[in-house]
Amino acid sequence: MEFNSFCEEVRDKVRDICGEDFNVSVRDTLKNNSVVLKGLVIMGKESNVAPSIYLEDFYTDYCDGKDMDDIVNDILKIYSKNRNCGDLNVNIFKDFDEVKDKIVFKLVNYDSNLSLLSTLPHRRFLDLAVIYVVVLGETPQGHATVTIHNEHMESWETNEEELWKLARENTPRMAEPQIMSLCDLISHMTGVETKDQVPDDAGMYVLTNSSRINGAACILYDDVVSGFAGGLGKDLYIIPSSIHEVILMPADAFADVDRMIDIIKEVNSTQVSKEEILSYRLYRYNRATDRICCA
Image (cartoon, rainbow, N blue to C red; front, top):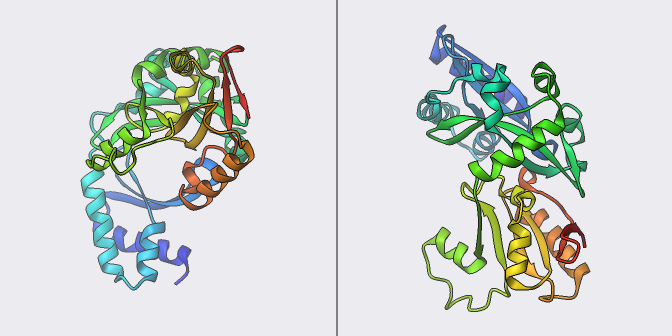
């Protein structure tokens, strides 16, 4: 069965089970780096918000031999677990005074998002783009956000410059920066002490935010990169690990820039999902100019 037919069959089976009190549909969602995912949306007729359950992984399970009824049951379990979106009030999105303290920015690759960026207020930063989202509130699964499109900005009678000013104030407050050594991060994530196994992390430090989601944007926070470089007394190389974090290294830690760029490309192609790739470039922070540029 082809993927589109699979999505239609899943939709029909879920629709039959949920009954007339629910609208069940499959929607294409344009994600970061021009990734398009098929999302199953199950929305109660009294609701105005619902999670999207992406079907690509379920199709892989189906191709591997999993029974369709088992797949549908798994989807319904996920929906049941995630259907409660908390006390989100999506109506506040209509009122600029209600959302302006909730506007934050994130970083994406410019060339990989040309189609999406044509619909969004944004600004260039090297080979990247700054885009804006509104944090609507907390759900059991984390922050619920809505990306700001051009029509939102126009309805608010504001402009990109104002969004940038607001986001520069809000983002560090709502997603505080964190810098830790690579060893400490691995130990924290795995619960295993790594210093004996990895005694020398080559001066590599991870910069992210408190939620570790879209943490690469921390390179735009005031005084974060410059303060860290000042503490070391050295310029920095900035390695774009993903949209969620970057790696900081003293600029004297290695001299072969071309080799590092090759490594970035290799890691992106083998270790990072397409949707989470930030860049294939290497950046350098220069203390004398207080600027980040492409190495």
